[in-house]
Length: 224
Length: 253
Image 1 (cartoon, rainbow over the protein chains, first blue to last red):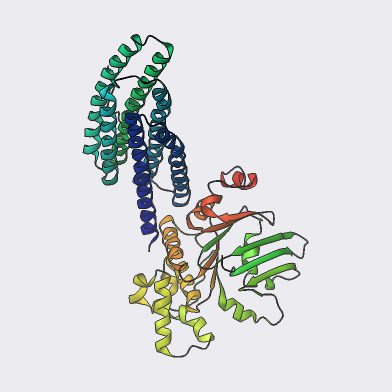
Image 2 (image 1 turned 180 degrees about the vertical axis):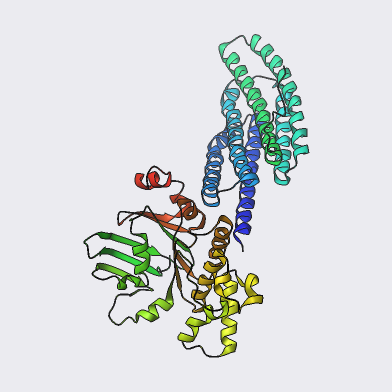
């Protein structure tokens, strides 16, 4: 094998590591949403504990990136591939934190049930999970068109968030007790985590475009 | 882990003028890797490299303590045949040193000295070593031309091929790309990468950057002492000793 072939194999391994990490994050999100729907505090706890695996994946991949930079001294596209990887893993790790944030809201929602949960929460969850899935397809195939399409879906996440926000504000106003108000606040936190998750998926899309074009651009400017 | 191919144990070397060139150096070099010795000038890198095939014997008045083991046997033991040792551990110098004569003759010279007579065998070994040194395709149609007509990078790969012809176990390279342009340097580095499948390579690099590019494992030497050694991917990302960090980042040297 030539040096170049060796380097390319390492870059492919890096991409596969990132895809595996994204799967882990997606599983965390799905479990958090299941725990929320079922008000399952034990499952929520599992999500909180498993976040350490996401963090570890990030640090392991980061180490590999450092080793590649120092030993391969990459330039041009090779350099962008590695810096993209380093940015994407930070976004993925934060998405993992968002899933954990949802899980951490659950115990209070179990203790003081607020019904009904705004339907937008599960809708946002499904949407951002699908966006993550798609952005990883775009990442695996360097597909900038797909990255832009995903970014547009984030507008839908924002719209759902706005509706969930009004709904929860109504519940908060009608709470009648500090406990209920706090539980409603936790619901708001869940909505906020999901909205942020969508933003992070969009960031990954921006990095894919940077990798392909060499230009950094905001692909979903918040104009509200 | 398997036993190291080369093991240096508490090695001290003092020159006739009482300069201590190496002070208590211990390290292990394993098979089929590129091991890099790096550090500022007068660190003891070339001294250590030259000890591995006892070229250091040629310097009068040196005093040595400690051991260098090749496959577990002390290379300084009285019964060791130095010519045989140098056939197992061959050296390529900074400045390419082709012999007068054709490309073909450069490769067969050492083989003939070693007793290889059959033209067929010689031809086979010439082709194989030139291929291993990634030079074959460039010279196969002009094996009878003078070695001096080659470019700098080609001359250096010819010298590498010449050592390979004798089928050594270890190839020592003392700054083999010092006089080469970046393209020729890349070709030599590329051939090193392919050679380590068969050989063990110990090299003093041209720069820290080259050390990081080619090394599997590296040792940082400073004023005759081994400061640290380990996998390149670790050492060039998180050196453990501040002196290594300072040297790698260009704060001295």
